Image: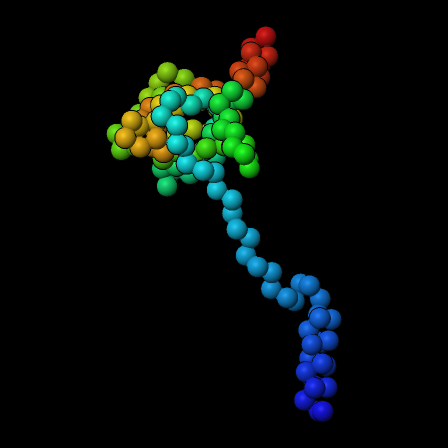
Length: 135
């Protein structure tokens, strides 16, 4: 009888602890799926991780991947070995890619998850700010 009461007491005590004291499960980071299409993808830079040689783009509306259970609007790429990046027509590096830049990505013929050629330009909002400041 004592063991049942002790177990009941411990259970009630555990339930009464504040939520902060109970450890919350680790939040799983949602990753963008890797590109699977072999045609050129266009959109805007969404995220850049230079140390992993990876970037994600938010696809333009006509390029969304529509599946029965979801619509994929953001896809990820790795820069292929020997892949080229141009930013506003000049040779660039992964570190030069910034969120919001308009981008056109040509996937590798052998692995569409790897970008063979990346052409990026400043975002339209940045262009407008620059034009306004010149007036």
